[in-house]
Image (cartoon, rainbow, N blue to C red; front, side):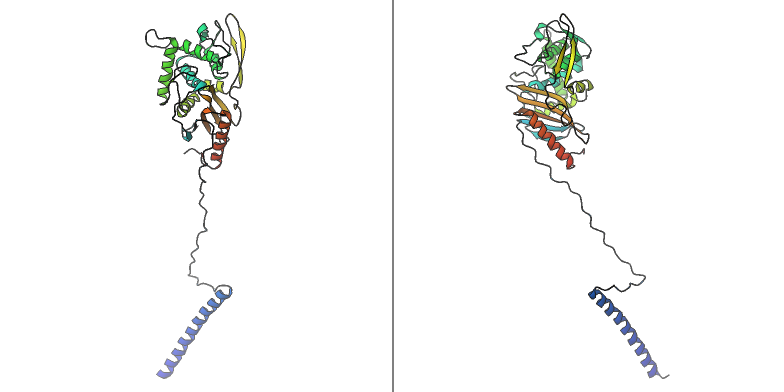
Length: 326
């Protein structure tokens, strides 16, 4: 075969190959344009698969703190002490009988619950004028039962008897009355707990010029209260009976003043009402999720409505995943 013929054959072969490749490309283009099946890829080709987009979970905004009638309020998670809500939380205000939370803590710090106390005339109060558990001079009963009378019916007579009896065992300035020594011990404990905006002047919380606590300070005292099983058991009782010895032995039936006790997991702690303080309440409750919270309301127009509102608010936070322990 001559050189010219060979070049002609080679040129025809190259042309045929080019036409074949072009045909395949056109076919792929036409299939793609018409929605037909794509041409097979070479065995060595790899396909990059884009990952499916995934939604990133985001928490909603923290619900706006609810409207309350209380002049001051605070909500605290007991486990770690985190404050979820604070309204005028550091303003010193009259405590009313919420001061008895610190009275009870001071008693347990310095006395044994089974110690017997004999009631003196100076311990007695007029039940028409003040809350009382019904003590009479000469009665004998344990410190534990006086604590029941202190925390359930909010007995001022129980507060005075406890302050006197425990104060007699405390060191203090020469000639200082037992109650004065007890008050000094209350304030020392308050300082130890970090209650920086409080001053206690009576064991019962009655209106006295200069006596004040803050909502934050009461929450600190209540958190310490919840670490005392004896006090938690007492505060969680709706009613109780105590036996009184002495010249007039009898049984006293005592009921809690806390109207929300037993509602929504509420198991304490203390009410308080005076003319200067208004309605006050320190409430502890356990949620469905198992967390324990404290709510303090001071100077309220409707303390129970305020606390129920705060319980609802915390429940909403938990439902949104915004109240979990950090």
